[in-house]
Image (cartoon, rainbow, N blue to C red; front, side, top):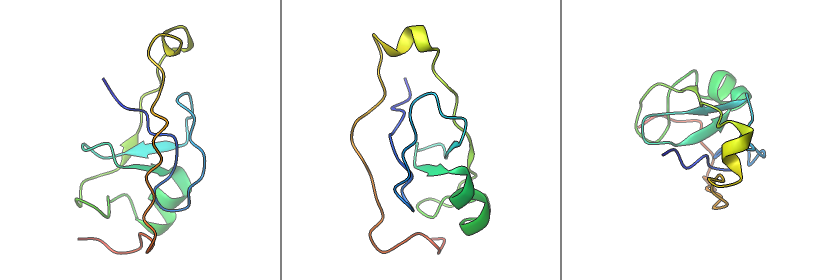
Length: 82
């Protein structure tokens, strides 16, 4: 099951579990649409994988399967690929 991380690793923008702005790689590194397209050009700065729209969990399932509350942030920024 996806963690549904709560924020963009680049800019720390909130990304609720039902956000259509979240982008993830296959390792679930999470970025907002703006950072994923304008800064990272569709590539994860952690693994180099492609960033795709994160699936949204149905609202009825969020009560029993909420998203993660653990925030991940790259303090040095995320403008470079591995």
